Length: 141
Length: 112
Image (cartoon, rainbow over all chains, first blue to last red; front, side):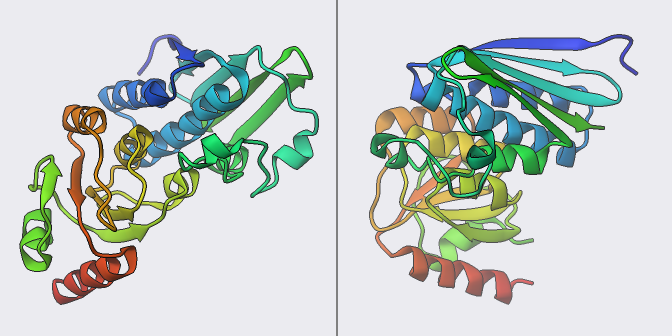
């Protein structure tokens, strides 16, 4: 039993494509130590990784916070990037605004947000063009 | 048990880093990392032509048994260093993704 909320915070570096995923790997490690099931951990890790990658590709980084309780794991990914002009379009599988250099790394397949939705129980997007985006994903335990 | 060492011996794979003492459950092929991220399963042999550092993160998060870089693709030393740290087994092989998947599939079938 967790007595309270356990919170992890990570700075996601916008310049550094090579370390993208570092926060997800850390979260995965923490959740494993806390005894969560492999399936829950997998879902959190995938959703979080996609979020991290999006922050690196589109928003020059940001801050990722993960709040863990007995009932849920909540991932809050906040950036000060360009915002998402059309959320409905961005949610479509295969739609991407990533540039060619990003695609050559194997990203930009338009699977980021769809994966985040698929692997979380709830996905909330707060976005304002020119101000930034905050994504809140919850995985119920 | 189906394991990496037996597979590597049977189909002639050479590891560039990582341990061979891992269980294999299946096989997955793909180069789009987000796609692989959502479809590869624990214990899969992942065959790809990608070799950048993000391959290591995807392999680690999906808990693949190993990565086979096909078509003679070799990871650079930085990628290898991170793969070693995260205990990701990487092979490099001259055969195509298709040929490698056929061979892995055959191995899995023969050792059901």
